Every structure is written in structure tokens, then in C-alpha cells.
Length: 190
Image 1 (cartoon, rainbow, N blue to C red):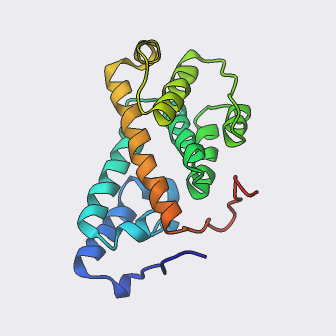
Image 2 (cartoon, one colour):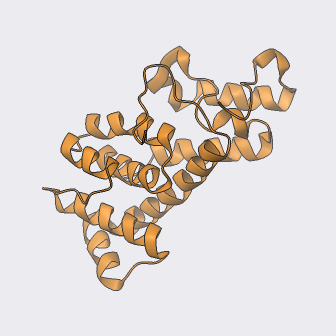
């Protein structure tokens, strides 16, 4: 059971309505169509609309305007989702990772907490960097240099941004016990 009720437009303040419309009319609408709304972290974030607007705009930038190929961005996102055991996050982004070109076997290995076998060096570099930063809170020169060789400095910054942003998303989802959307399966059901 979620800790907060879904806020409906008729119960929103003017500032909340602006954020709601920005979420619904932005790049997420191209992906989700009319069903985009206050799913994921947005139902919580809209309760602090100044923060919520900044957070949703950062997320839209990281997700839709990154220089990284979709498979690498989604790889970073599902690695965070697994690390944080954020069921909604992993369930929402695992299919996007596969659609973006990441192998289903790699996604499954991440889901169950194993080390995936990657054929592409850039995938292995993103995953190693992500795991090391999430686990150790820093990365070695070797790990940094490996990722930089694959995605350049802008890509390194964007991977860090994805990891930080989706950690915040995952924390929001976990704290508010955000329910899975209809049709989603809990990837971490014990």
C-alpha cells in the first residue's frame, strides 16, 4: 500500500497544476502517451512543486537529451534500480533497456544481482563504473579511464547524473512505497 494518495488535478494548487502539465506535455508524453501522469516519483514530488518541477526537468534532460545511447543510459538506470531495490524503477526501465539494445540476459543478471556478461565494452564500462560508484562512493582511476575511453568526459558526467538522479527517484519510490502500474511485475518479489 502506498503512503500517499494520488493527487488529482482538481485538488491541485495553481503551482502544482503547472508542474503536472509540464510532466504531461513534455517528452515523457511522446513515450507514454495520455497515460503519463503522476506515476513513479511525480505524485510525491508535486507536493513540493518548486522541487518537483526542477526534478522533473532534470530527469527529462537526462533521459531524453543525453549524449549517451539509450542502452547505456537505461543500463545505468536499472543498475541504480537494482542497487536501491526500487521495484517500480527497475520494472519501468528494464523493458526500455532491452528496447534500447541491451540484452535481456544482461538485464536479468542485473535483476538477480549477478554480474552480466557484456559483449560491448561500453556496456561493461558503464556497469562497472556504476557498480563501483554506488558501492564504494568513488571510482578508481582504472574504472574512470575505462568509462572515459568509451563515452568521453561529457558521457562520464551524464552517467554520474543518471546515477544521482535515479538514486533520488528510487529513494522517493521506496519511501512513499509507490505501487507498480497495472501490468508491471515486481522484479524483487521475495
